[in-house]
Length: 164
Image (cartoon, rainbow, N blue to C red; front, side, top):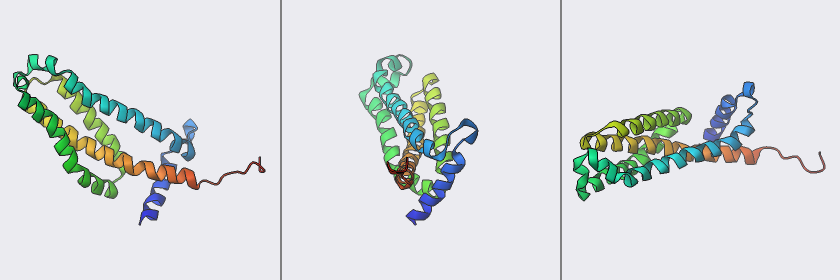
């Protein structure tokens, strides 16, 4: 079963390559980890921003003055993320991972934007829960995409120094 998954992904890689832009499937295998790294960096920065902005957020959202409420706000993301990760893995095996990642990034962007404008604790709490679902989907798909990219690169025929 694993072979069929990586074979189907290899054809997806080839289709995702952009010949008009001069990006081959092998180049995609080298570029994709860098793109995923940048997305992961932004994601972790986004997670840390909430805790560093607590005092500024307390001005607009009075409920955050209670440590319990702030703790719940931080915890809902982790609880939802943890509960959704196995489900996201199952969904990622059945649907197109590339589009799940793209959709998750759009949801993540929209939620981050909305979090910047809300002044209601319950809305913020719900947005953090949605972000947990979105990140679980993206993270499980990223993990599953990295392996076929590395396998494909490792399986590529190598030229010996004698053939040059």
